[in-house]
Length: 159
Image (cartoon, rainbow, N blue to C red):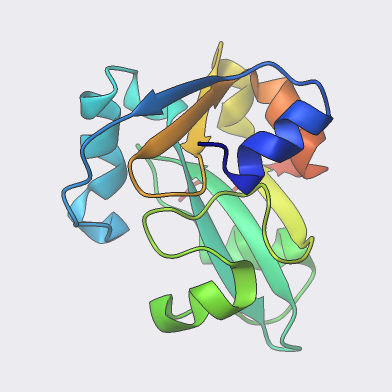
């Protein structure tokens, strides 16, 4: 079954691999969800990038991708987005804004295109894994292909 994220990559003729895993139902980043996911699909955790959707003070939605081994620095996220205030979108608002639920939110294939920022550590990886747009599915691809597909800005976001 193809997800929106996969259809976008197919349309751009970007190669990728799909990994499936058993979803344990725990998707809170603070509880190590991305690190457990890396173990399940047997990839280095620094190459698994979580998707964090945030809202600025002007209500603009921005998407950030950060390695599973680190936390996002809100000051750096504000600087990247050029705003004074930024905060994560509430999980209950995620579906309406993006078309995705927590634990299955991909930076690709959201309802609308949002400005996207990827932490510069992505460039240290031979490949990167992102959510395939559904819980239990990860997409593995080259970092430069992810950057291109998302039309993302690469910047320092690490805490």
